[in-house]
Amino acid sequence: MIKDIVIGISGYFRHLSLIRKNALARFFLAPMLIGVLLIATVGTSAYGLGDDLGSLMVRWYPFEKGLSIVNTISSWIGGLLIFTVGLILAKYIVLILASPFMSPMSEKIEANSNYSPKLPSQSLSAAQGIWRGVRIAIASIIKELSITLILLILSVIIPFISPITAVLIILIQAYFAGSGNMDYTLERYYGVKESKRFIRSNRGLAIGNGLVFVFLLMLGLGFFIAPPLGTLAVTPEVIKRLEKY
Image 1 (cartoon, rainbow, N blue to C red):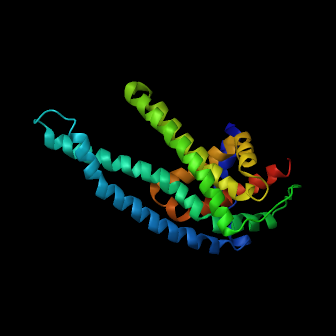
Image 2: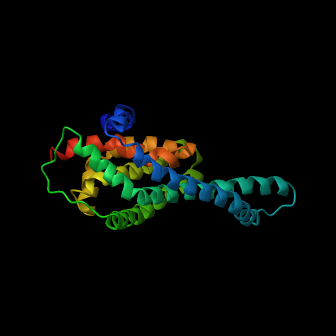
Image 3: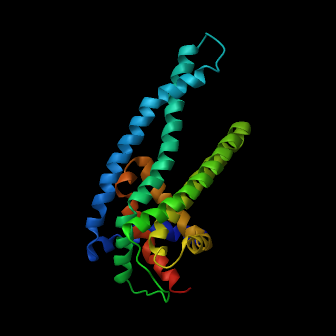
């Protein structure tokens, strides 16, 4: 799996030349616009609702002494929690809304590649692609938030494992993000169940691709370029592996 993680990460660098070679620059425009709107929404929500959530948390503090400091810290924590949840949800919104643009991009990369999967293919309409993305996203959000919440609770109960839980949370986010990028190609060949099975068999590739994707989101930059870069990085490898199936 380590080898696949490295392949998933390195794809972001190995396939950059495909942007010019296959004239893919136009596929970056719509995701960039979507990213601008989403990061503005997440940032505004975190700033506006952080104080409210912080105030609710302060009510559990029973002392007058140090109340102002606790209030300030609670506001920051509240904002961070909202931003974290918002980031997870925004990640899926980006993947869903970018689907009508990333699927054709993946198809064009495949058409100009040296690989040709011996599987019956189909082309989904924009509406079908979005609906498929919604179905996958709902299931993934429930799983990811549930696992993340359990790990956060464990890190509070057993503080010394916090570094481990932090790494696991990032890996989980990466897996689901990479899965979304892989599905832009898999949707032409598999139904949802078959696609999930393929991704589980290649989970290292999903994690490697998703690690860079999540890192870009954390920088804020990913809201603008992560979807097309993630698709560009993983599509050639998915096509190559499909050819062997």
